[in-house]
Length: 428
Ligand code: ATP
Image (cartoon, rainbow, N blue to C red; front, side, top):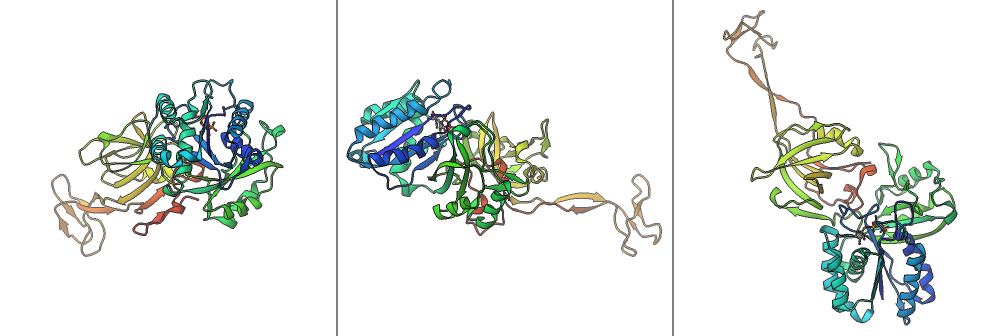
């Protein structure tokens, strides 16, 4: 059977992946777990999320599904932060006899949960129509993520994936500052990049795979396969780990992006890849955020933003000029695209007017007065008008991304990019 779980944590603690790791051990008593657990990131713009909008799915071969269900429910009751208004846990159980029937339905549900917005009623009606054993707590919003995660487990071959090695803290340490040796994370990165990524941010000298919140995660190493994330984790020196789990995940896949043909179809709370032409010089506003508009072929405009946390990425964005052709990727909130990645396709040539150059000595001529043209004082040569000189653009066409310290979970890092038709500039 497949078990889907979501929405057990609050800002004050817990993490649904911790419950997943705990259950992986517990469930050995009821059967065998042969598949890696799943950590599925859903629509990153959903306001109900605590942090990264994650849901978890596990698969177990068992001859006592009733016992498994009772155990999972009791673990949620024990660990979920029910006191928090935003915590509304949900768990669903897909029995093996229903796999074939539910595979396509839950595939579409997964797609929608990652790219779109789902009402709780839709999840509840699917559950009752299909007779899916489930348990929702409080308003049961977690049933949405729980169903989506099961959809991912039923359709393993149909979505791109990466892996994350998650190490969890000993319980008595939860909520206290994490004891880590920073240098060991840089070493892990040095030994395993580019097969692992987002362990550290070299340019900003930051360890980015260690959270700062009160949750049980000590660190999470992301990478291409289970072996390499395990190798990277072996370099880490830090406080004692209570347990760890390797999750197969849709992180780093761009699964959230919809391709937009025009700005007219763009809606808040969705994420897009959109091509357009820069239509004004980027502006730096209060707080250090950099904003510029792009225009589509119908002439509609939308603002794109490189917010302050994107750090050095803003230097690149500030160099854009009207006429540059770009493809931006990112989530839309309040009518603005929050850029995760940008493809600079075409850099427009810019010209400035200069006094003409003397053909004899090569120096710039001087103006002879209004409407009098130009003259070289030394050689006496003359010209009637100014000349246009191309301005050097400090920009190279290619694919660029925000630095690791500003990466969204679902954004595919450029280190995973396979394209050969364009220069790729991974952020490190
Ligand atoms: P946790 O570790 O508890 O999973 P989180 O940051 O991942 O923390 P949640 O606490 O799970 O966030 O909150 C997200 C809530 O939004 C969940 O109840 C989930 O079911 C719901 N949700 C996820 N995707 C969508 C969607 N596309 N439309 C509507 N609701 C969604």
